[in-house]
Image (cartoon, rainbow, N blue to C red; front, side, top):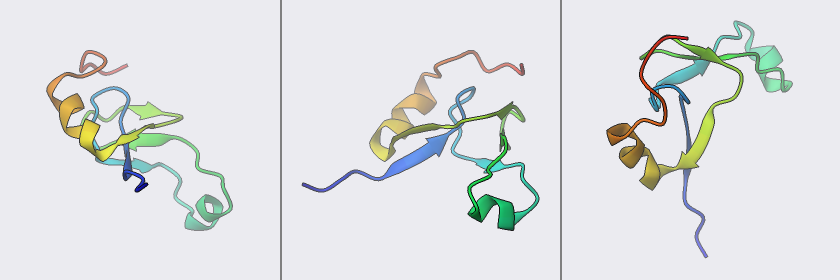
Length: 70
């Protein structure tokens, strides 16, 4: 059985364009992630959604939450 690839998405706008706001790559490799930030909606959040790649395209069509800044 082949596992489907998972992608991390913003829980606000479902964008795949997210990154950690941690300036130190060393801390990130040690497991200290900090918060995530979306480059599309500019929201910060502690944990991104992790969904199968096939579902990422469907979520773009129907967001889970309204696209507004918190």
